[in-house]
Image (cartoon, rainbow, N blue to C red; front, side):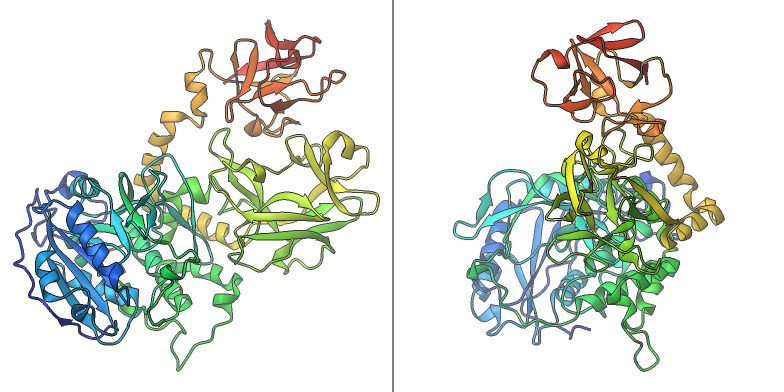
Length: 628
């Protein structure tokens, strides 16, 4: 735990919180997880900005000045700088008493470095403003940054808000470029987090230290875990506290904070003393909040290989977190998975099944060559290997990434218990990259066709050549070789078994959430936005006279799975993919079986005419359409 800090400046007087109902007051009423939204509204007025600073030197002063200059004086109550063991102390170098007085700075000091988490907890526990803002000690908030925090937290005192994080030019201490900030992450099974994008404002997991929340919500949820040291893992703990205990996390699309990234320039290198163990912190977060899903952690060496110590788990005593969990009657982790259905169900992180991918000519299986968990480089590879024992998880794959056609699962093939999806074939190996759960990375759109046995990405297929080497060729060329794939050793993974069990045994936990998800789905009914804009709506395309039989799927091959049909719309004489807006193309003048989607160019092989219930091209190759 952090040592008691020594204050270097007196605290300003504590303001009275302006409340609406019981939201910001101290009514003493029992805490209700699913509170009436009307009771959560209030009228915050003032900010305490907390800066954890360890050996930041001149950057601490630049950050203080930037905050002071971009925040209205009637809003900025104080800037709390927690000097985490800097030598010499910041109050003797850049944050002298005159500077503190001029910029409303209050310095709290740890004589010994305890790390980012302990410094933020010290500052958070000391803040007196209505809203606490936590920034790193090397940022430049942009003009108007504060407005979204007041508005969004005023709507719900249990709301944690994150700004758009942009890049900082350390020479001019100004933002590089405009917009395009990052804010959203999701939690992976191995207690890591990945960036992602979505069309709403909600954030599953925060990336780190730039955020704001009401002082009341900080106090109710206990702030940070006092047993975590250094940095890393506190974002997982805080995110799960928010969502499971009745709060929420949102991204402020109109609040920008430029951040100094440590990108190789020696001036951006960390100068503080490293303490703590991020693996220890991450374990504390997930063992406290995962509940029965902690069994899944045994699939990852980081957790499975650690032993107990002196009769205690290696991650220590969790009673301080469990006290919050019990006091606030927090929801189970399965609720979080359901709340973010768009990631965990629709992007395949709770897969219906995992399976081996067996290539028929060689009798060998595709094996991921990396380890379980996050790829350190962000990349990996897979090779053909003996199918081996079912205990070897590196042989197992599952469907992943959203299908952009309708936002449901799935459009890619993901190596089980990793963050990697297939991307392309190179040098007799399948290359992999970090999965884009949104489905927007077309390079990861590989699918296995149950009817043709092809692993396919549009008109390109993966298979083996005459020497048994893994290759990628046009599907027409590869079909002649007889290379086909099939699923084998399919099974339901433990994470899915646990999730289904929780949903079945505790329907009351999910009742309200399920209604909200159903209402949200009713608004778009799983259709791409282009379908709402197209004058005639969208349709699926089937073999002529074969309705509702085999349809064209996202790989433009025929499938009997009606849930996989690609959506199209007509625009003039062109038929376009609703997910990407590119044109249906005949591809082969001599075959009504061969279709594709390609950039629109106005050629006759992309021109279609409606003929009764069919669309036909200039060669009278026709497809039957079905309105959806």
